[in-house]
Image (cartoon, rainbow, N blue to C red):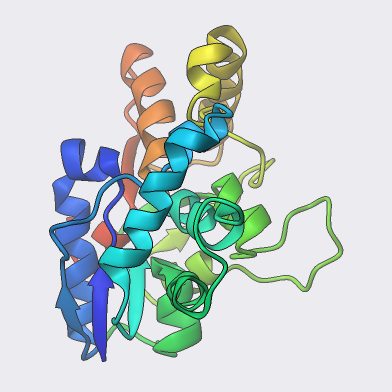
Length: 248
């Protein structure tokens, strides 16, 4: 199948290795991976700030750039959620737009729901891992079970991590609590955002993990920044890096 990579702005600018790791994993399972160079921001920062007139051209651009691919995969639940759940009124309500939106998947849900991945032969990582459930992936894409809902138990990202030989998942006290980043929220409500991030960092530290993994680098960037200021030994990595075997 022909899969287009949709890479979020901050990964493109600050963490390009995550895009490469995503492509490596998809290719390992037989996908032909393409990176459309005309792609831009999905428009989420503008939409979150109420600037829909500014977000609309980006939504229409997304549809044009990614039209014609079998699937579109992104290593970000946040950006995927923007496309699938929040493009109403921002782009045309027609067959092309709807098809592009429906074919857009977050990396982990694509591995589980489309590729039906059941194992990672030869992949081993002897680390203790705390998994952080990023809000958009959890509560909008249903990658796992949020504590406030009576959904069926299970987590797609954690199921993938459990396939890695030697990896030990360390439970947190409040695994589905927001880290406080929230995109523009971290700018508009800096003090609250930092307090929430420190709470999350404390939960990660108490779990006994030495590695914190998530589907969204934005969350990891936020908590990881606080960890560096507190001289915490915790390391923060995207799940694509783990599944690509890029860690030791």
